[in-house]
Amino acid sequence: MPKLSLMFEGKTVKEVPLGNRPITIGRSPDNDIPVDNLAVSNHHARIYYEGARLVVEDLDSLNGTFVNDLRVERATLHDGDSIHVGKHYIKVDASHDAPVPYDMGRKAAAPAINETMVLDTKARRDMLQQAAAMGERTQFASGRIKVPTIVVLSGSTASKEYVLTNRLTTIGKSSMATVRLTGWFKPQMAAQISQRDDGYYIGPGDKTPTVNGTPIPGPVRLNDGDLIEVCSVRMNFIFRD
Amino acid sequence: MRILGGGVTDVGRVRSNNEDCFRLVQPLNLFVLSDGMGGEAHGEIASALAVETVVKHCMEAETNPAAPLYGNPPAGLSKHAKRLVSAVHLANRNIFKSAEEHPEQGGMGATLTAMWIDGNVLSVAHVGDSRAYLLRNGMLQQLTSDHSLVAEQVRRGIISANEAEQSDMQSVLLRALGTQPQVEVDSEEQELFQRDVLLLCSDGLTRMVTDPEIAGTLQAETDPQKASERLIAIANENGGADNISVIVVRLENESKGWFSWLRPGGRKHAGTNGSAGGH
View (cartoon, rainbow over the protein chains, first blue to last red):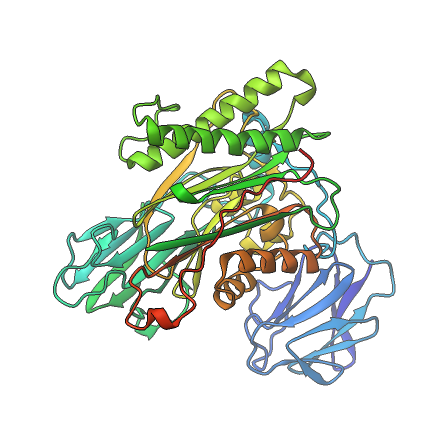
């Protein structure tokens, strides 16, 4: 099995086998390879298989990730390469067979279940449950339903609170807008919030809204408690239990 | 608003038959797309039946608004959205019935995603993982939620969106037309604005082409037919692992402007009837 060895002053400090899961490196103890050094960022880099390729990716670390002394954002690793983070080295031992990659890259190969199939209700329940048991982030699966809500803090709108129920929520003067702005010179569609599978994203309409004071020209994912401002209307995005 | 549409379907570079089907009904501003599944040629039968049923039901309602509604569409919806939901329920019934009557068609099914534009109101109805997108102010937004196992896992926080894209379970659907006697149909209405661009597509596009590539293509190519062709070409360049179908609809300003007579105006966009080859 291929492995990574963390080296410090010529000695092996830790060995981690390379498997299907990405290996994370950083100062924070929740990393697979924790490196206790101030020059190392909390979540510094990660190493994973992309198809049969072993890849290192710098996670926007302050001091950078180096492969054979060249600073990289992302690089393919080969047997014998050394990755340099802070004062530590990580030796790559990929001389053994690569594990069966869990990710063949979506463009590299046809999916394993090639033919489209439909799960009947029971099979579907079982499969989701199984997946939930395997998954790490099961807090949403445990049944607490959170309702995304816009609470108007100041400014003129038709109502003071809006529950986001649609895939697309518009903020504007239009009579069909979800969050309806009132008053003179307001645009029909000032900004828009779209629901994606992994959350809610706000983006510009005829105006550029700000989120927590930062103007956002393109879609940005909203977090619980974010402050949105557009057309002098201040709103709070929250998840209600 | 002037509504221009274009559409293309392509077998892709791996499959030998095309199980996708689509139709643009320009006089009604109705756009329907379906991706069939099932062994032999049954996926093609299912998707063609789905599209045909939806188009026919909506067209009949134009001449006879009192025609019966199937599947109890939600009361809050507009007339067009109700009709569209009803049409999808009827398509489910027709495919299921056909499979019952012809045992060799057992297991066939289809996705269906349809858009109907009435004035500045868009109605969307869908089942499965063919998607509807809206490009507005450079932001590409998916108007439909995939009824697939991986999308459900992302919504429940079990896997990340990235993991979903890499999953080998992407072809597993939770809902499709024709596999059960009843089906739940998603529907939504949106207000449209000038310069909005709408996209309907089968998963053969979205699994091969990234959102930024889609958004860029729709922005760069303003002719809907050419934009559809370009998207198909990119999907094929990226592997073309499945059948690819695309409908692009663009909303333009009706007012012609003072110097409109100088432009090569009045370009006619012919309605396209697309159907997968072979039948």
